[in-house]
Image 1: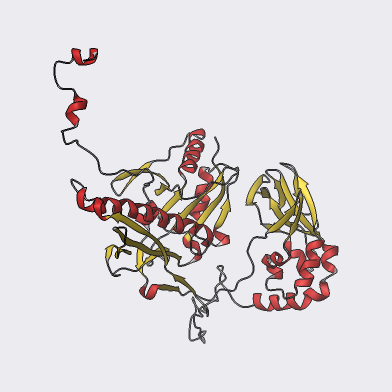
Image 2: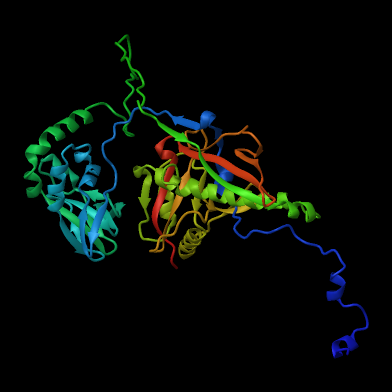
Length: 457
């Protein structure tokens, strides 16, 4: 019995015709592919032997880290060993003293726009910032208030109290957001003065050695002299234990049934398409690791002196200007797409325009001539904050470099190989797909990070 639809047809339907026709089709698509700008912009350097050593001039470390805390409910305590991040307590040997000192910190809860200390008042406490954001404010040339700096989670101030000399606060410190701080009074520190004195004397001896503004051992020079004075002798001292970067690896086993490869290899080669998508996934993981790996990832290898916080929360032109001003030859800015959108909103509020520039045949956003490139591998915290990275790249400019090893067996792309592993009893062919990589920051100012970037509207 024929249906009404069949009775109305006067020719072969397209649905029926497709059963004997060859359709036009795309290659398999993958939604997770991103531009991977970091992989494209990093200069890649050969790591012979799978390891790359970064030699630097000797630097005197004086303790410029961030302090970590523990909490029980609303009560917060500093981890005693973390007090060694304060310059005066760097490498302090007695854990028992640090434990006793940690117990004597007082917890302070402040709201936004509250004054913590006032310039000119006696400096009688050391403060540890548990969470929140505070501004360091000074007096400008004409008596107006000026912003000197911003401190955030894990920062500290007033640690000069450990030295024992009476002094006054050089700037006013005021909260920007609700903040939790721990404070230790001078009277409590004086209880440990006998135990601290030998260590502080040793620190003073170290700080007496000649260094440049970067903390590197000084090179003695003479200039502007006349006649025949005795010239200073010098040598360039190196770090005795330079850092070595070992290549990391991302691997997977690609499996293809021989029946699929034998019968369904036209018009597209099944192995080639499976391998193409697998390599895309490995490259995505590679970029993720270059950003987030705790050993060599850029977010964890930026020098603490090269980390700054936003002044007001969202990323403003002022913030990016300060980030760029801390280094020469900035090659690229890297940010989560939502952070780039937040920066665009701030430019719109000020009536500014972030121009586009051409990079590798594409139009990309920029700031001060430096391309601002998207990277969704940069995480967004549960509080809605992210980071913006700035990089100087290349070995010739003492920048950030990518590391890889080429010329490996069965190589299909630089640093990536595909090795046949055999056919098992289930007639499944297996291939081991591997890529080897790492990244190195040659000198600290090659990499900077703008932290606590609020991406909300």
